[in-house]
Image 1 (cartoon, rainbow, N blue to C red):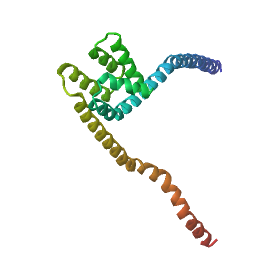
Image 2: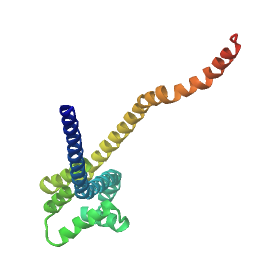
Image 3: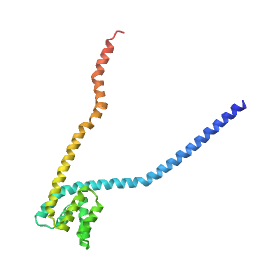
Length: 203
């Protein structure tokens, strides 16, 4: 009897001790999770906003290439085209063009200013645009013709991306159709027939 009582007390103490340690561990883990969320959530939110800004800038730059080609072919300089665009559109790209022009007006060379533009906005469209400007500054390559080819390539890539996304929609609709729509249709169509069959069975 004493041995049974001792085993019972030992098991009770072990359970209480384990529950106490479990509570402490959960409390510590909750505190750590809360502290990590306090540290990481602002950075994650800022990172998400930066990605959205870069995405908008990339799309806007692709749409702007044709307008820049028209300005260059009309006889305007590269800086004049950027200045006209930034004055007319205070968008994300317009602000970046204004920053580039301010750097040039403060004495920075075009190459360094355009490299700063690329470092602030590391996107594929910006890299192609910056490479065209660098070739124009170093080699004297015709900027309008290069930007025209980039605009045609970007429009073709965007059209291909839209076609690929449209082709993926049919594949993505297979799973909702099988697991969500078909069961409801089976209930609506087969359900009344099953009910009539059950009612017709002899009782």
